[in-house]
Amino acid sequence: MSDSFTPPRVLLVEDDSVFRMLVKRLVGEDFVIEEASSLDAARQALSSNRYECVLLDFRLPDGTGLQLLPEAILLDLPVVMMTAMGHEQLAVDAIKQGCQDYLIKDDLTRASLCRSLANAMRHMQADRQTLRCRIALQKIVTAAATKCRDTSAAIRQRSAIEADTHEPLLDQLEHLMDGLVAYARLTSISWSPEPISLTEVAREAIQDQQHLQPQAPIELISHSTLLLKSDREAVKAICRELLELAALDGAKSVTLETSTDAEEAKIDVRFESKAETLKAISGQLSPQAQLNGESGGNMSIEVVRLLVEQLNGRIWLEEAPNTAQIRIKLPSVSQFSGVITG
Image (cartoon, rainbow, N blue to C red; front, top):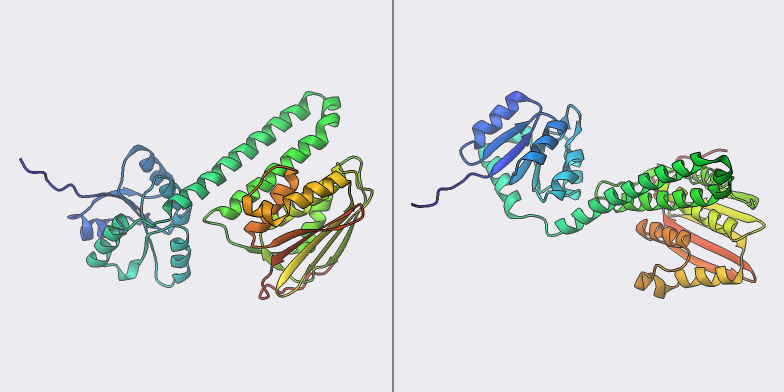
């Protein structure tokens, strides 16, 4: 008794029933095509069945195919995406985010479809493990941050007195988790920079520090008249963590200075500091610490360093007697040169 060939099972995610029939007619002899007409139906199918590949439409009734792509990657499934003609940028984004191939519906033939599905299953991307780790990191950190917020909210509700006593520590913990969530998003396959106002972000970061005691006056000096192409929450977390570090170190006054030009953005935080704090910051920002990835010391600085490095920026310490000046440079993009007023 000889072994018989078993056609690979492919999940076709497509809301157009006529197009689903066309796909089955084109490749039905070579592949077992199972259908899902929405993201929700596709998720149910993926949770209860095994497939060798996913053939994914871009536009669906409850979202886009890119939303399902990370879930397919976590299942180690190759993905071929389809869309209408004239959306070449979507093809670039899909391939960048881990899709194996991309097809234009108007050009679809039996030969092109069979070849694309076969190649997708045969040649999985070599960096799939890295993609899976990045997706998993974002899910884990986001879940941990949610648990952190739920726990701190429960503590605040127990007693007004206890909440007043522990509120600065609870806020600091939540801010650290917010910074980690921003870092996880930066490392995800779907992240892309956005134009932001550095002045507005700095003001929001200052507003977030009003709860700290003793409250040090914070002076904002802004020369940021151009938009920065970066990540809003990550940049806010950078400013907020540095301001929080200064406040918790007992600084009497703090200066936050920002500026942007066509090539880079600058964030400088200056404050009076204790000698032991200066020593710890200097150690964490030394080239050796960055090279070895040492994680000891102040967690605010550690989160800031991770965010700055992920944004392809630089961070360093300039010391003066009893004064810390933490300096940051982030790359900017001149085409987002809208002028910010106020």
